[in-house]
Image (cartoon, rainbow, N blue to C red):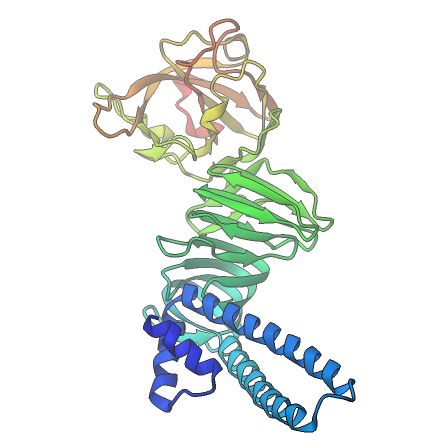
Length: 431
């Protein structure tokens, strides 16, 4: 029997002294796994007491059981009842005092309730937290980090279980948080070792997107849905799951949304496709910079070519991160909606003949950009992409097709990139 088992047994025997109580409290505070085991043991003890109570009630109803035996069982049940009360009080005290959190970062923060100290590096014990304004990033004792965007309201149940009532949360469980649970109004997210985001800002739906790794979604009806890296869904009030087309990011403010981001930050209003999978587009306002990710689910980046840099006028363009898995889909149809006075750009692999939709609807600018796959144990040389442009003075929708001509799509096909700028930002000679 290890030390924890020994202390747990003595606790349920009501035989802990003061120093042992402190030792057990420290063990439970530092390990969510031990806390879970402690609670399970308590449940088993309570089930055993219930069985004994039923047995005693039956014996009391039978007249030929002798009185001394009944008095002995009554003394046992009195002790068991006292232990049950002690367990309930202890667990209630432990579970309602919240968890310790460390503030990693904050910006323009306004907290309306909770005992949180907002200074970076400060530690507070928090159970209920409401932030009315700003951004807050916290770390729990098990290295799980949670970034909140206001307005947001949540409750810390324990180190491995948090409930978000409203708002947006990005969770990174680290190495020790596998199995972490985030309850949202329409679903329960169970982490399988990942980074994920939950958007509970709408009253009738919850958006979930997996940034890295995978999660399980558990509905109130008992259904389980698995999401992998780069995938996302919307769960509505009835518990049904709908396709999530996009996640929008504004790096300047830190804001993100699974719905509309009505701050005028991006010329690209929406992106959707005709595929049946759960892959999600990422729209990043002003996101095109040197070495920026080209996909959200593959380690590839947009870079300068050795012989020429990324065109200076293109830097700072709004960027779409598509799903790499769509590169060889011959039936792919991507609908992009842009604001008025927008130039839409497509980056097409240079030695990959342009498909008809590109050659007929866009014009080449004569400029190029590089794309490099970051892989270990191999030389990573950038692949050259031609930059094509389409001016859309009235805005609206444009439909993009597959990455290559019919009949030439295969395993070596590379998916195009999508970006947008105001029409006046592109050089006149390229219009």
